[in-house]
Amino acid sequence: MAEQDAFLAWGDVRKVTISDRSRYLLIRAGFGSKPVGIYCTEENFSNVCAIVRAHTAQEPPAPKVLPT
Image 1: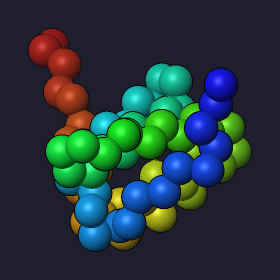
Image 2: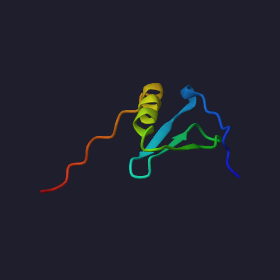
Image 3: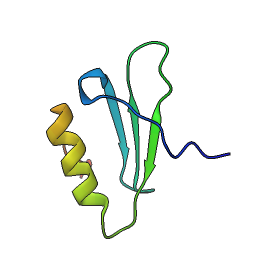
């Protein structure tokens, strides 16, 4: 059963994990709160990430530098 009506206040967010490959965001609040997962389409993924980062001051991950 899906939990489609979960709620977390922006001020309670403690950690955001973003998976570019699967276009998925996992938003966690404090102890005792269930995390909220968001699956995105290719079209809305960058906008959703921008909104979450703006509300949580989540810095974009640093680009990975591959050894040459």
